[in-house]
Image (cartoon, rainbow, N blue to C red; front, side, top):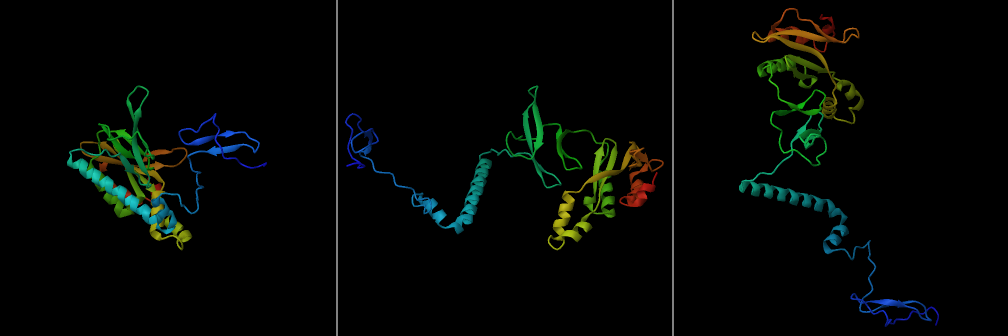
Length: 285
């Protein structure tokens, strides 16, 4: 009869090692002969009947997925802790990447590669992909500029002492909030960078929906600083400083002297820090 499938084996093409048969032509049409093998069942993707037992249990209860994910993360953290404890007991240490979190909240990782001359080339990137450096090279230090960018720079002898920087920071904190001013040291000069306080205007716009603490944190992370004043060391033995401010006039656009004769740092701070952030600073010349 036409259209009827015939189950038979072609003697010229015997079944292979998997028990599969062969095609042959007949009056009833082409028939596929399967010898010693069972037909494959259709997978029920929706029901998950043919998934492993663990996957069936997980997908049959979608509400348990966050719980299972948290459990997997906890197991991973436990393995890392046990591995670190084992390494410490054995006298080994785990190499950790060198990272630095800037004031903007971004984390930078120190990478190392080969330069054109075959020497190691160090650089910072926000990606934690290899090759990562295991340590800071000798003679260098991690430096973050006022704009929040992170660099690796060579160590240089500092002409400004730590006590003088602490005295300046204390004076600035009495004048305004700490985040409003950044201190930068360049050779023999202490430069003060100022950021405008825009939290009041932001609170008027977003206060009903965003908390005051969040607004202030975002303002600090996105603050833009400008150099407004500097104290230049002119006599290293007597520790005398000369006060200068930046003139924003197009014809000048440079530092100008505002302090007269050089004086000690405490005297200079009492005389000029009070003008920061005020219109009176432009009257100093």
